Amino acid sequence: MGSPQNGITMRLLAAASALTVALLTGAATASAADVGANDDSAKYAADGGVALYGEMTALGLRQTVIGVRFKPSEPIVIQDKALLDRVIPSALDAGLEVVLAVYPYPSRELEAGLGSPSLFGSYVAAVASIYPEVKRFVVGNEPNQTAFWRPQFAGQANASASAFGPYLAAAYDALKAADPNITVVGVGLSPRGNDRPDAKNNVSTSPVRFLRALGVWYRKSGRTRPLMDAFSFHPYPRRAIDPLDRGYSWPNAGFVNLDRVKQALWDAFNGTAQPTTVEGLKLHLDEMGWQVDTAGLAGYSGRENVPVTDELTQAAIYGELIRRAACDSDIASLSFFGFRDDGARTGFQAALERLDGSLRPAAETVRAAIAETAAGCRVPQEAWRPHADVVGASVAVASAGGSGVAARIGAGEDAHAVVCVRALTSRALAGDSGSRRAAPVGSKLCRTAAVAGLRPRTVPLPKPEGAYGRAEVSVELRAESNRARRTVVVTETALRS
Image (cartoon, rainbow, N blue to C red; front, side, top):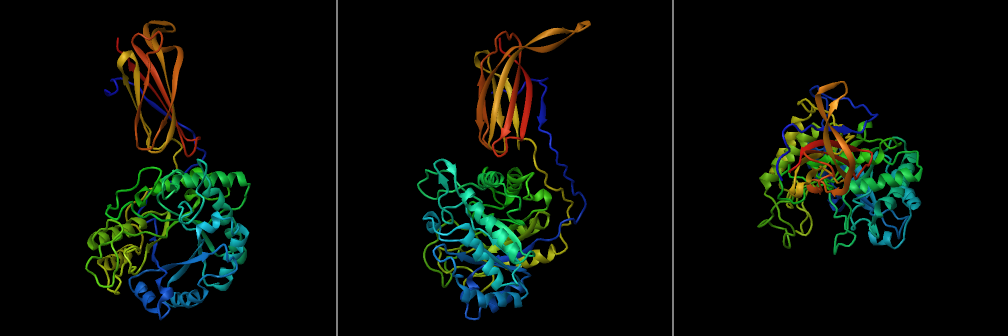
């Protein structure tokens, strides 16, 4: 298809937003994000994690995330309580903030109908009462993945978000009743999902669509309290060999696609009692990591189960992650998954320490980046603003075969398009026989089309009746995630004779 004709006039009409967002244009406005590690291995250390936590603080890490499972078939049993009794004091004594990530598991018990939101709420309240020193709880662990929540779908519709929502709400209410000073962080969302209920394996929901479904449930529930004080996200790369700037296709999201997550939160909860990042909701990136090659190293077993990067590349990425996080005022913390490697290569080897306790190059890079960003970001920053229009909308129109027209439509997200064409004819302006303008005549011919995010498509239209030289083409795009967000493009184009 050829480029638009010269002289085409185009206007973008975005839906008006009642929300005014200020820009942060001054230097050093963002404070540094806290850096930590998500690592349960200290539970099983003979010294209760004393040495491991000491090594973490020596590198400048400030927090440790420890998992606590709620087993639906044993709702009154605090899982691994004896181990938690040992490691939590060790972490606190080392000067680390302890974050407990509490979530239902295994997912097959949820699918079997065991457990309930009220039992889960009672469980997290009991954990909070046993460990009153812990002031931050992450509620949920990748509920958009089958491994952690079943079922994901009911027919073709997402089911995991509306099932998880009551669990998050119950935990929020129970934790706030136990201690109003506790920060409740939801959801622990995975960066990826295939949105395919018929997939042969790994049936899962993309993060953007999970948040949309969670917002739909929340609005229908009539709840007038928030679900969370902050939001947890796991921005792993699509592959460990990917560079930091290679993100995901929409509607999945990695670190460089956090704007999608922020927009999805705004689309889901704007105008409700649940704050979005615009109202100060902070992001906690509680799991991330680039797996590295461990070939030839003592102690590791099995074969690598994914393509892996090298240690120097990992180090460069980790340093850049910390620097960029310091320059995003919405990010409160980030934690690498694993401070020390798993021994089995079927596990995860993305840590700052190798299995034998020796430090990877990433450890020194992380230490230096933490020190470098201690005062926050020194680059002038601009706050993220929610879109009132369709993200990345683009429209190009030209004449096509058979005297018709074709509209090439693109968007940075899934959108629904209504494409219309009608004839233009010249007529004199009132009171001035020497001036003429194009005016639409006749009825519109319209077609609808689905536009996939980042995948432009061409929509052909027939020649409108009565058109002899030019035609008017209008395209209205509405975002799949929020139909109130729209972009309208009106264009003129010449027709082939």
